[in-house]
Image (cartoon, rainbow, N blue to C red; front, top):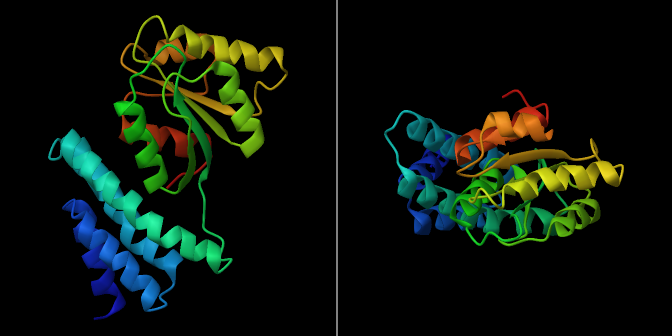
Length: 218
């Protein structure tokens, strides 16, 4: 099988949500000593981008999106440790600290955004749900993050997004990290009003917005 056929098999596995196959192909790539960065860039990344396109066209829905993101995550779980072992640098779009703000235990949407960011080349540090605001800042500093993503599913907890930006200003850290907000009650107007750098209303636009904030055009 030539490389192009192999990449097509990878794409098919992710697009169809076949996790077992996506993982098996990742293992095969490591066993056959293929260029793993090329495998990611020409197999897995185009696949998840196509899934995003299908979702935007209304041909794919949330379950398909979640399944494909899980395929990608599982495959990366095989490939990235191998790259690290061989001291091969992986191309990263940037490092993201993500979580649902304090007082909010909803995390399905946040989990999907985290998976899709990871699938599209971002290093993701997921703090989970009900995260204290100072923990976001502490972790962003520890990890030297580029972007802080704050999810809020309640009108009461979305105020935490505003508070975090105020805290960054108080600590003279405003501008050191880009801040992106999202969640059911959140809209672009709110994001602009509180001084957030970006806003996303779903996992696909979160990837697009994050890339834009990192200055990535493609």
